[in-house]
Amino acid sequence: MRTHDLVIIGAGSGNSIIGPEHDDLDIAMVERGLFGGTCMNVGCIPSKMLVYAAEIAELAAHTGPRLGVRTTFDGADWTAIRDRIFDRIDPIAAAGEDYRKGLDNVTVYQDSAAFVGPKEIQVGDDIITAEQIVIAAGARAFIPPIPGLDEVGYHTSDTIMRVDELPKRLAVLGGGYIATELGNVFGLLGSEVTFIVRSDAMLRNEDEAISAAFTEAYRQKFDTQFMTDVASARTDGDDIVLELLPDGEELRVDAVLVATGRVPNADQLRLAEHGYAMDDAGYVVTDTHLRTSVDGVFALGDVTNPVQLKHVANHEARVVAHNLSNPDAMIEVNHELIPHAVFGHPQVASVGMTERQAREAGISYTAHVQHYGSAAYGWAMEDTTSIVKLVMDTRTRTLLGAHICGPQASTLIQQLIQGMVFGRTVDEMSRGQYYIHPALPEVIEQALLEL
Image (tube, rainbow, N blue to C red; front, side, top):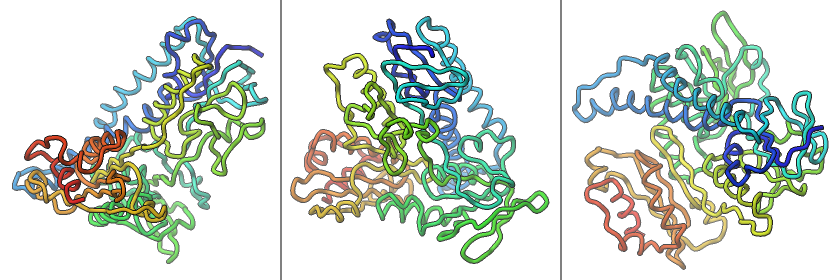
């Protein structure tokens, strides 16, 4: 058994922990996949590069003609789009791996890890240990137990972005952020997409008004099968045939994207067997300093946090990096206001409480929905469907939550995040600064003024 000073499992956000302050440590980096983790290789970065290409297709096919501009969409060169993305991303992952391997104080283990003791880890044929360990092992796609699915073959977000051809007919299982982002990409680029959603709406964890607006937008563009599940899958010639519940109808497609959620990789590490506290969903339990129940072991990112967001994992990595080097002056993680965005078409962005959560918490609140078209720029866009929804605490006149469905949602929400973090009232946010006229942020100003 080899002893290191520090073992880090996972080269996503975990890779960013190592800094100059750790130059005197003997560090082990364990990574079974590509350096950079989910976000860099199979998540945020490549998917948003695809999203941008799809948005251009949407502008050419629909937005331009609607505004009197003679644009057309003649189809996508899928191979060119894919190669443009991964010809940029793959060298970054390789360079990150080479850099770590080139450091005198870092040993890279490229295999799966499993704990064989509280602080003993088997990696391939090696067993390693350390006084300090960081678990940043991420999460993986959840695959529902559908009879025949393994035999017919399917894609997840790990594989769909690298396919050789654009599927002519694509079934997307799920109505969450991964399903709606990637399904929209393939639909806008030319695939015939069918969404199979078990609930009655897409993005059902969003505020009701946002989920409803988003769901209606997708109903208008795609074949959307709500309150539907897949009973079985089989092949018939070149077709994949999905038997749908509850009616027993058959859907014939060329490819299936399974996007029904993600589960933490803690079970594959066998943590529960060796004294690590876990929650009911299989996430590693940590305290406010991101320490696990085993002394000297920290955990961060998707293996601990069900929000599974890269900006959260990056924040947690900074906290762990500090706490490793400053055991007598540790800092706490801040999960108070975590924003998120869905890069579908339309975009969705959210921070804080939904109206439903405020109501269930018994908080006295006021909610208001403002349409983009009420602002000059939204009017110029001839936007009739995009909305901003704000939820205000009537006692303090501060925002409990902010939710946007429409163009530039992920950018527009940032000023509201900042106002909420610094405790500004609705009145201060609306009147305490200039809003450029006629820029789109005026819709935020108008929503605040209505409260």
